Length: 360
Image: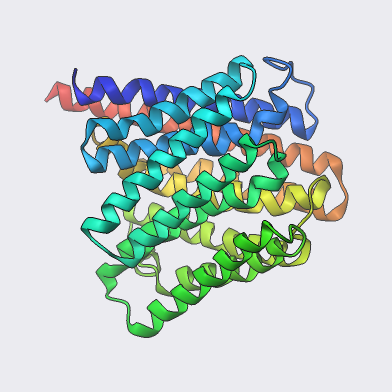
């Protein structure tokens, strides 16, 4: 079986989790949409983080490792997402996702042994954070008790990847030390959530803020933003995401430890939607060719979903912090539209590019 035939079903599982997660998000924020099954709304977080992003990140790692067994990671997380969509009773989905995260830890442990590097260690720490978050959920801890660890999975994975790419600019010793200090503070906050769930998140905040400032200062996007075409779009997406990471860190300092309500909504979505999805918008044109085996051509309309994503967050957080439920609901809906527009735009671009190449 060709690599493409193996990868496409895994991409489909990830996309199913994304679509179901967005639907669940609309239910949670107050839109009267029919639930696909009774427990879907409560599965919003696991669907988005483990079902979608865990599958996509696991698939990216499997492609990089080039070993068939590595594909077990996105397969298990994808099947876990499918279980949540279908309403399969616990502990099937949490168990599958915990096994997937354990597999990702093993992949990074092997990579670190063969090539020790700070960026590999940071991404490996992200995989461990995913494992801890899923294990907490599997053990019966509510999602709000595991959400810091699920966020840690994405923050550490992304900043580790950006650190790897920053080597092209040859950062100095001071840059490396600042990065390591910010990561250490962030990890300390994560660990503290296990014993002091009201205090730990407030320590994560300075770590996130420090990482955002480091990225804004040292990431190569500062230089490529002056370029046109795809490099310029990627840089704008990255820089907007770093701003949202800084906003999120500030909110975690102020409101970290919230477990429900508008402030909880603001702290989580500045991170998971503002930072993480801006990173997805930026990296998709790079990752998709490697995963799907075909090029992605740049289109100027890539900026549309990115602009709408940022607008949606401004509206949503204005509602959260200003006490307007309507603004929060409409901001949430605009965010869903932005993500769907990005997916549709990307799929269309991939298909058009493939057809153009076949024509030649």
